[in-house]
Length: 492
Image (cartoon, rainbow, N blue to C red; front, side, top):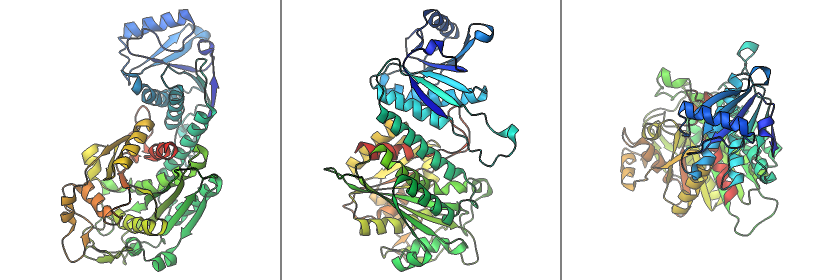
């Protein structure tokens, strides 16, 4: 999809669909220079009782016959601070509507805003998110979705920034990569294949990349991670991607991202119910987010040294699979009793977190994982849960999520709940019972991170894979957490 920026002439655009926004208490849409067209659209808004809420929309044909132009008017919602997010959602809805109408080109007139760069960026991000379709395996032309070939964005004469455009494109490229990885079939994206995809991304992005195989993981002592893989024929992989900025700047930090990469999770011997099995190819959503975000760092001009570590495994039910009641050793030396083989993600992450903290000595560390169904019960399918006891890191990540349009909500790390994991013959059990499962999972991980190291855990189990389509997105992988990571890493 080709995106071009234009200054004026929106009303005369010959695109198949013209998209404009309507602010609260505004009688006509932004960006429509032609007075006659503006009056006609304003009359249509009045007749339809358009309220200008964020999800309001109205399609209207101006003119007759071949000269008719179809306008799509979208509400912005109340309060200017919400406009960027409304433009992001509106742009995504508009490009999906254009595809439904089999339109080849669209024009988008941006509204006035306090921050022109944020409005433009939101529009470009929304176009990327809404225009995505995973169709690489479709061979039937009748089933292939229509794609919009080009979009003209009208900035109404305002100065635009090449940096905003560059960062927006890097964002869209990263989100698309994460979605492609999550959507791929599990037999086509095994740990070895995903490791090669990370190597390819690293080469394209100027990163260093090291892949650790079974023998090296055994030598390093990543014992819990290796136990998870016992039921699978496919060998595990740990990928270590490294980004270093071209120039060192004062105040630059060393940051670590850690991702859970279970390329298929059957639940192990504690087998998942059938209705939950089909989407378990998405259990590597955390790893996909790390790989994708790492690949964007050079393009966004990240000033910090960033390391991305992902643990890639399959959790299957072979004759050698690890069992409930097993007592596992870990990289850190703590012992873990297996209460449930379907709580395998924390066994992968605990070794990676301890290894990264010891060998890299970072200034901050964030892990991302589709870790628990409990967080979906708590927050619903569209929000991720944030767990941290570091105030500065919490505010940075929440601000980054808000700027990117993602839903991120802090949940507590009640230390008293740790005792739910402290029963049986080992230091920890990998499950803590029915209640507060997202919290006890985060507390389990906390035990493998030094107390003085700023650390955050983001549970993306809800938004990583959309099981239903929406006006602004397709079914499947969403690229969850990639926008938040990019905003966080570019703003510090």
